[in-house]
Length: 364
Image (cartoon, rainbow, N blue to C red; front, top):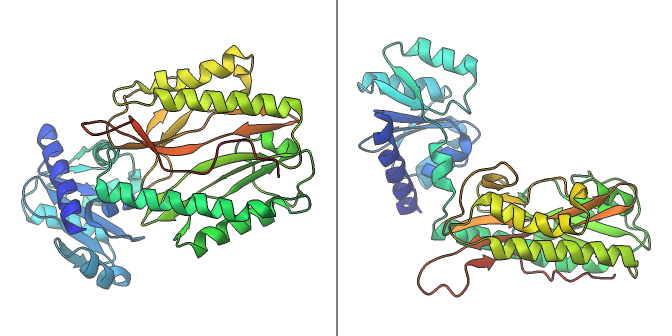
């Protein structure tokens, strides 16, 4: 909605004051979409510290930009960055903040050569910082993405049987998400069965599921540009005692992490709340990644919850909580949910789970 994008641009303009910048040149395609609404493979956005912005994209996206971004000036050109740098120079915008973390040295050199009167200064991750807290529209899109994800998993549960391959199960999940309105998978679906479950980001293979396997499925739908993320681990047949034990341990760790995910919580403390449960049980070396991350227009966004990370959770911040235990040669368990940290009057709980599939160990 144009009013939401205008509000986001106003927040960025306020941030430009602290940099004493005349304008910002946004070249990250994700950030261009966040500020304007345009999804494109070739776009940039020039936002003065005061006044309306200018969106540049090529002819492939011209009609879409005119339709989706009616409240910004549109320039149709293939050389989007150079066109906007020239526009800034012609408008007397002498200090131009750019996304140094996204721009290559070669592109920066081309920009500087094309507009020698401009002083280019780093913007930092100002737009990414704004994206951490979601507005109502963003949370609605993310909620829908998570609902599609949960429903798709429940549909394919009857197919998790001996004989189906990891690749076939991954394809079935992605097809089910598409049938329910997903634009595409949020990321490459992970299906890790038996000993492959010890590899956190295993790529599905032709291995057939077998009785006695634990099967970890990590997947999500993308809807309206927003990414869901959910992991469930199920048993094929009745699980062995060791499988039940590590599942119960991961479930307890996840609940500890969810409980700790409150407004104002330090991200390292949230990670430690879940990690401590696993470490106390003697499996610390088998939990090999961070506890979770933000989600939104990208599948991995700030904040990141892990050892050595910095920051605090805030109101209206979507995150994942995904502890795991991985036993080489045997298998593994990971349980992951997407939730929104909540605060404020009328909020019954400091978080809202968006992925709703049961977290009980299913024996299929």
